[in-house]
Image 1 (cartoon, rainbow, N blue to C red):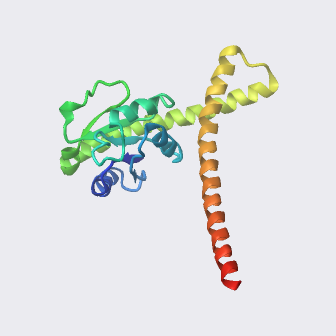
Image 2 (image 1 turned 90 degrees about the vertical axis):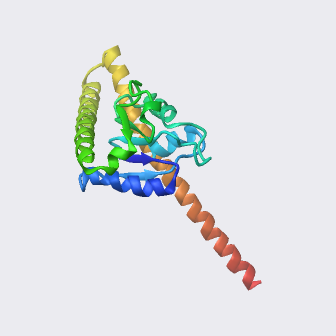
Image 3 (image 1 turned 45 degrees about the vertical axis):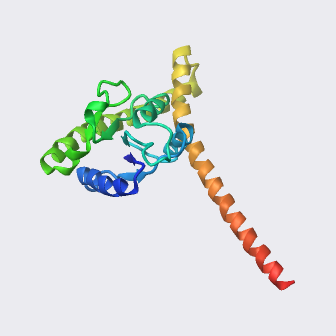
Length: 203
């Protein structure tokens, strides 16, 4: 699970409370927002597997992001229609819980109360379990279409479905490889700078 918030203290405190919901079953990863939605989507795609996302509504409060939580949720929905998304806020009435992009709105105060925390945890688990079943079904369906494609010709509908499933798989692999290559580039730059410094000191 990803938990996105603009305040470092909230990332620590709310992150711990969310982790209490799941114990050792699910790892809650707190992350801060990037300035633009486009960059933030790339950051989210770099984490996998992700079974749900909790987003603070006022991401712009610290001046880092230029968008609110519901806007980010809408952008995520453009590429993933199934992943459970929740908005976390102190002002529940200010967020439309009927928005099609989110499951529901979480009140920060509820996460502080043990009796409410249990109910929230049960609801989150149900959503996550359904999504994990969907992920398994996607993988099984991908394998079915892949094997059929080797032996026979896919119908137009099957071909379109296969392309969508392939895109979902390859997108995460591509982001992972991009991050690996970026990190490798940083290490090479650091090593080259160190070698240049040593070379200059020997002159």
